[in-house]
Length: 271
Image (tube, helix red, strand yellow):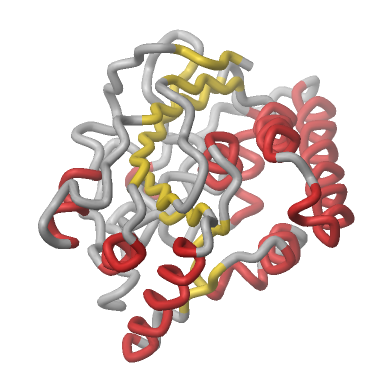
């Protein structure tokens, strides 16, 4: 276990809902969804050389399209994230969290080095300016924090999942403090975001979770074959740079109190 990116106790066997039997007529729809997601990712890779010339509104829309293409409805609530240097932090459940967080505000992602080797998505992340962390090299942490702070000082948004590992959604981890030091060093605010997944009937679900020894393909298949899956994203109150005297206090203030029962207000998007 790494001190920088700990391993959550959640596993597919103990935490993830067993998928219902997939009916024959569901398979073509699921294949179409997978194809649509892949095409959107490939389009993103093709457009990454244009980088900063693509309006943020277009990037946000593209990220929502990825989630919708997988058959997932999106609900984002709360005030719009501010411009300028900003650290976005959220609880981490699924690979879907990445486009969902970018739909709040496009940002440079902070990700484990393993993501670089993911098919298609890894190439997109690398070309999109992702800041990669080697979780097996704790001594490299100060340099990583310095790189994050440098990006924040330049006015960029950096998105991170401070739990350090994915959780199933019924439980959550403690936010690691290091990334908050970068926000303090750069003097920029922190934007907490809370992510959860429900079925259309209102029941919380772990179907989209990507935990433990789960495979990306297995998680993808659960999502595209699910019926009535809804991703709920709450943009919480902004934490100014001086919200806490130290990174520990700032990390605690940013932690979602309960990822399974968000109090939705000020709906700004239903897609």
